[in-house]
Amino acid sequence: MSITLNSPLDMHLHLRDEEMLKTVAPLSSQSFSGAIVMPNLVPPVTTKEELINYKNRIKNVIGDDTFTPYMTLFFKPTYSKEFLESIRDELTAIKLYPAGITTNSEGGLSGFDVEELRPTLEAMSELEIPLCVHGETNGFVMDREAEFVSIYEMLATNFPKLKIIMEHITTKESVEALDKFENLYATITLHHLMITLDDVAGGMLQPHLFCKPIAKRPEDREALRRVALNAHPKVMFGSDSAPHPQDAKESCGCAAGVFTAPLALQVLTELFLEHSTIEKLQAFVSDNARNIYTHIVVPNKIVTLEREEFTVPKKYGKVVPIYAGETLKYTISKIEG
Ligand SMILES: [Zn+2]
Image 1 (tube, rainbow, N blue to C red):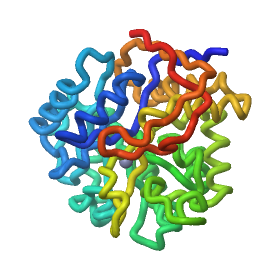
Image 2 (tube, protein in one colour; image 1 turned 90 degrees about the vertical axis):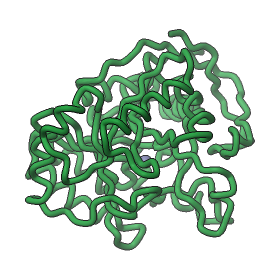
Image 3 (cartoon, helix red, strand yellow; image 1 turned 60 degrees about the horizontal axis):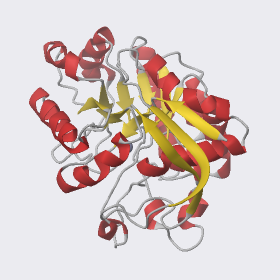
């Protein structure tokens, strides 16, 4: 049996820069039609010039692949409406990081004062620029996302016309928030659908599964699976694929991030088939995103997967992927477009 996906999209992706960009960008551009590219470079992307230059660097390394990088800025509460208007055509979303919460987020936001945020968030609402949020407080690591739900609620009620994307949700509390506010949406990663904290730290520590937000409890994974496998219209696939060199993961002070991009469609196919919801995969990996991000133009690409074993490479360049060396049941057999 073969599975066909039209124009798969990855709505949360880290492509990094320089050598790492060269290694990982083609692994996404091959099988996806486009991706929301996160701005947490060093320094982060905060100007029009940096954004356009980064987009061009991405385009240079993906060759002829049919793939659109949807560009983002690193949120600053100082962005004016004039500035946002001037960059509107190049920009798909703005990503908000609380300060110091994950890789290269030191320059992020240190407080959530509505009045301080109002000018920028109202300008974004008017210009229909979605706000993508890494929603974690600086509380206890297992509670950070659940604690952040009150901030999502504050943002959702104060800025009702702003589309707010709760990025890489990992908890049942975030799933519940989805249906409470019309303007809250979410991305869900592959790894949070597959693993719990037990897979990371229940036995010997698995550095390649360590990420932020950290994988949670089985009931959280169940809540994520429930909305992903049914392609709840407010959720989209966003891999949060986040490559680090092997020595940054297998070290004292392991970097946070799981590298999943080249295997995501194969593993999602297996997961959706296993749960007899394969007819929902198209919406989860593409259609919902198009309905939420109404301004994106999506290039046509048809990806066919077949039931055929595929052994995951031990490394892509210097990066160890999820399921390294393991055998998956589905493989990408054809890419058209
Ligand atoms: Zn991310």
